[in-house]
Image 1 (tube, rainbow, N blue to C red):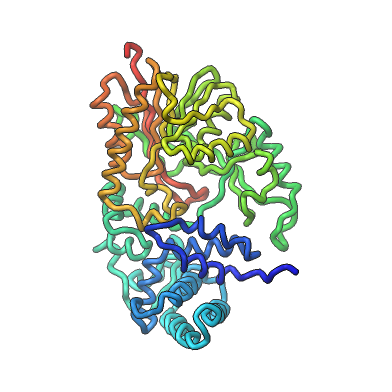
Image 2: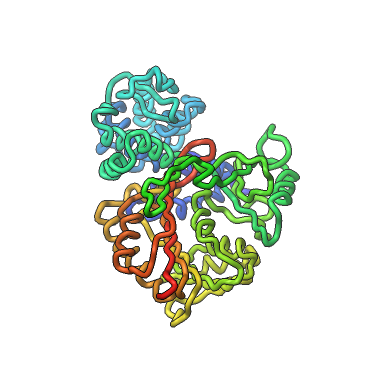
Length: 495
């Protein structure tokens, strides 16, 4: 007899009770529990949404529950946090259902004696909400938590700093992000761009896939998805998707901000595309990627639109020898193979030899033949026409997905990373042929890890020039995306 499946809320509590932001990864823990529920997507949203907004949720508990946070038993706290997340950030969910199941889960996890306490705490918080979804244009921002750029959850008293007088403190409290990080963004990008970055860092990120053109065309993959019955009730046939076009800087109307370095910052670079031949798609159906038709056959790979930019800017050719130096988990490696028609000679390596297994899994699933995996120590004196260097970084451009990063990054960590990034750049130079190119990329939006690293490199290596650098900011616009940085460095002929 099949065992009873657990609810998404119960699973979320189990995961959060085992999660320590500074020590482990929520996704790894979550994967161990997802098989116990039929509400996989919802459980994932509850776990990730609560973690993304944890500092903010704790502020609400401290201010409006009638009980100080530090006095709440640990086995009860995550039940209350998850319920608060739903009450504040998913206003379409009935409050009575949220409270009732929180009370039920309390009985199962902590015993019936604690149910009255949890019920009282949540009822007290709800009593302080004056409008569960108010237009921000009509709201008092000192008492309103932002749900989207248009709406928020309004409480009956001020608990937030003034957004204009103390913007760093305000954004930090509203978006559960470090004060020092917000301060850096404000200094670099200004108020409005920082607000956009904060919303993007707390979004529910879309799933984008890149068809494997070595096996299938975009048109054929769309047709395959359309034939697949949709699992959502009332949704009809087919998997919902949208085709996305990558817009060049010129098409996006972006100006070069540092002319001598051909630097561009992309604030809006993706748009809807009616040309089915374009190969990036956003999946809108709520289904695990591994359950989509064609996954096991290697017909597509998951890749954010921003993550695809470095290879596009490098423009690798079929007759080249290419090194992917920090290859794991191999998504960009597969992109290199795809854009060169699986005809280039590609070497994938990584200093972490265990992570190379993931590269192997990806190239085998996609049926790629042009990639050879080399242990780092065996590169020897090999030389390459171009090198992709996707370095370890702070992940400040992908905080919506790397949900633990906001609790781990510190200024000194970024300084240490910048040192490592510079060392890696110096190292890969030894593998580059004359006239060769290096593509340096990060999923960070911090200047210290990006343009500062490149400027320092150019001072040390006068035989290189910067062809172009591109910073893409995270966004929640029509096609939401992560942030990231790319620089293309070319070596002079006489080197």
